[in-house]
Structures are given as structure tokens and as C-alpha cells.
Amino acid sequence: METPALHTRRSVLALALTAPLLVAPAGLALAQPPSAQWVSAPYSYDVQKPHNLATSARYRFEGGVHTMWVYDYDAPHTPSSTTDPRTELRFHQEYTSGQRAWEGEIYIPSGVSGPTVVQILRENRPAGTRATDVMLNVANINGGTLRKDSNQVIATGIYNKWFRIRVEHTAVSNARGTIKVFYNGSLKLTHQDEGPANRYFKNGVYHHGSGRAEARFRNITYWRQ
Image 1 (cartoon, helix red, strand yellow):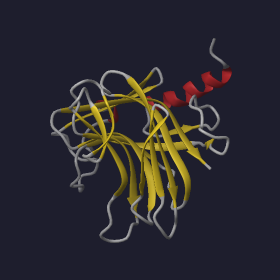
Image 2: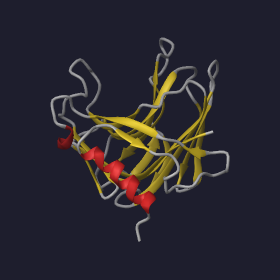
Image 3: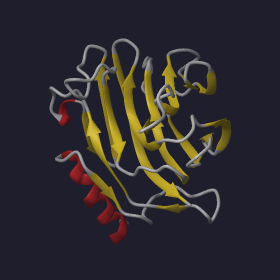
């Protein structure tokens, strides 16, 4: 039986079918924090997609699932951009310090290779520093492999099943902070971020490979301490 709270959540999320902005109420997420110190927080986002296409051409939200896809020949998300094509949820919640976490379940169809599916992007960063603190990429090897960048393996055999990813970030305003990546509740990676910056989370398909890239997401939760 659907509770009034879940009915309200689904009604709010259904707006993503007609508008690129979602506001998710706090306290309704299905995921559970690893400790009582973490609390779920409201989040909102824009859908970034090829600038010359309608949102519905590369994104849909049905049955609680965000599906995003893009092709290697697609245009970037703005006419002036020189970056790879993408369809992503760009979170509005920006931060320079403190503890934040993105969590969600992800489904990657077999054969998908090349996209970044979750990342922390850095804006207003010092010149010469990297644009991201973490990029989780999919490669078409070993039944589908999820890696940080192109070398640090987080999981293999990920195709055609739902798996849960949690990215925790402890950011420091004047020094390097720490990022932890969990796969199905197990800590797989701990590393330093790239130093002071204004940053935010993204998830979707930012495609560096060939052909079609697709990823599906559900039960997305934004946490903070």
C-alpha cells in the first residue's frame, strides 16, 4: 500500500517529465545513512543534455527511474562548449567545505563503454587544477567495470543489474579533503580531493567513448552532516 508520503514524493518527482528541475523533499529517501550523523537533505537539479535537442530526446523519468542516454556524435550541452556530449543531472547544491554525500542505485546496460556516471565537478578552482574531484567511469571489460578515472577498479560484472553507489566527500575550504566511494555498502576507495574549490555533484552519462551510452538511476539521496 502506498503511503501518503510516498505518494507525495512520486507526485513531485513526476514533474521531471515536463521540466528540467526537480526539488526532492528531505526525509523521504529510501536509502539509509551509515551513521546517525548523516541526514538526508533536499536537492534540486537541472538536466544537462545536447543543447540542440529537447530534454525528452535524451532523458525520461518513469516509475521512479531516471533514464539518460547520449550518442558519441551528439552536441555538447551548450553551443560554446568543447566538452564531450552528456545527459546529466547537475545538482544545484554547491559547497566549499563540510560533509556531503551522493547515493543512488545505478543500472548499466551491457556493452555501454566510456561514460562517467557520477562525478564531483569543481568550479572557481585555482588555475591549473583538475576540473573534477572524482569521476566514476564505465568500461566494457570483465562484464562491465566501474572505475575511478581509467585505472582504479571499484567493481566488475556491473552490467544489467542494479547496484548502489555512495560517494562521501569531506571538503576543506583551505586544504585538501577526503573522498570515499562505497559499492553496495562496502568501502572500495579512499582518496584526497583536488584541493579548495566550489563544487557540486552530477550523475548521468558524460560520454568519452563511442556509440550509445545509457545509465539508469533510482533512489537518489543527497546527504549532509
